[in-house]
Length: 79
Ligand SMILES: [Zn+2]
Image (cartoon, rainbow, N blue to C red; front, top):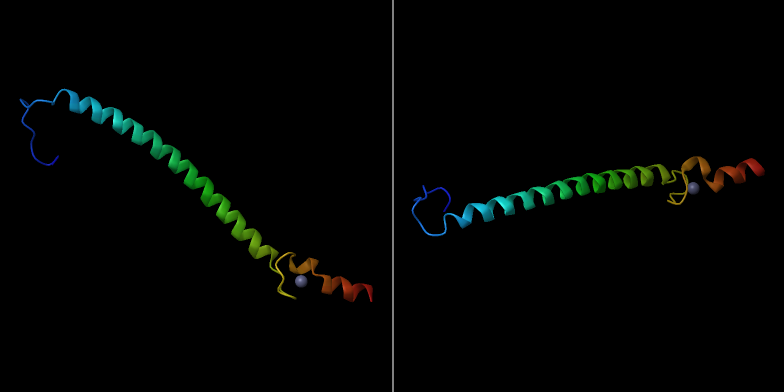
């Protein structure tokens, strides 16, 4: 549709560009918001993934503590 050269004498040519411009600026603002939101979500996911990797215990494979905080280690030390 937009690829065809538009005849300048058609009805509605005056109203159409105005609508398109306002719609485009609206989309641009939305794009900006989505962009920053996506970046924040990506950061969060990255943080969560990193934390999970750090938290995963290598001794008893429980995920609620890192390896150096494993109860098994402290049991050994106490006994
Ligand atoms: Zn553990």
